[in-house]
Structure formats: C-alpha cells, structure tokens
Amino acid sequence: MFIEELRERIREYIGINHESIAPAYRVLDEQDCGRYTRSLICYTGSEDDEIPAYLLVPKGEGVYSTSPA
Image 1: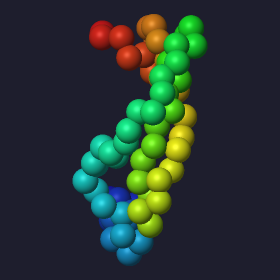
Image 2: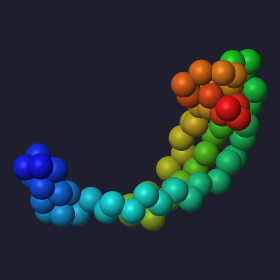
Image 3: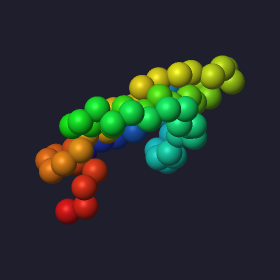
C-alpha cells in the first residue's frame, strides 16, 4: 500500500491527471500498408501549436489488433 500512496503523491505533485481523455486530432491522410494502416494526423500541442505525426494501426489478429474479438 505504501507504493500506491507514494505514486499518488508523486502524481499530485507533478500534476498528472487521472482522467483519461482521448486526444483530439485530425486525419490528414491514410495509406494502406498491407499489415497496418498508416495515418498522418495532426493534433494541438500544449502551446497551441499544430503537431503532425504518423499513427500506425496494425491489422489482423493479435494483442494489438483492431479486429473485433
């Protein structure tokens, strides 16, 4: 129990929010790459700057699959 209390105090001290909020982003482009889909996305950073990034989503079965179980 001591470890969880310590973790909680550290989270409060550095300002980590427990609420999980899905980030808002825009999909600029998508490409089927066979075993995965590559999306070029853009999201707003902490200083209101636009940050482009690639999001790779695997296809098929497996631990990280997007297929319904």
